[in-house]
Length: 79
Image 1 (spheres, one colour):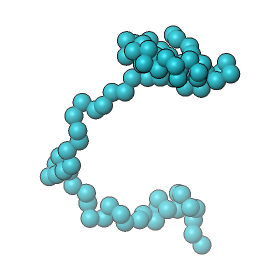
Image 2 (image 1 turned 90 degrees about the vertical axis):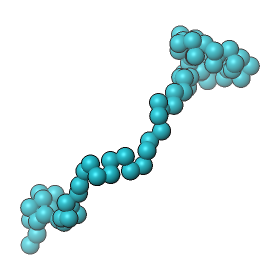
Image 3 (image 1 turned 135 degrees about the vertical axis):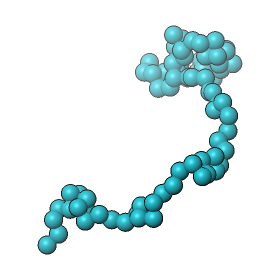
């Protein structure tokens, strides 16, 4: 694990990035206390496709209807 203070991180950012991409942990500290951990950025393998589940699932017509029994459990018996 590499440690760097903020001043060193500013000066050697390219080297620290190379270390992270090589699999090494890098912690940046301020006044001797760790404040940031550099990690590699990985994007999703493929973009999401809107509507991909269309026709595969259904939502019942009473989905949003409230249940008196459940409301009583959450809010107590109404008087």
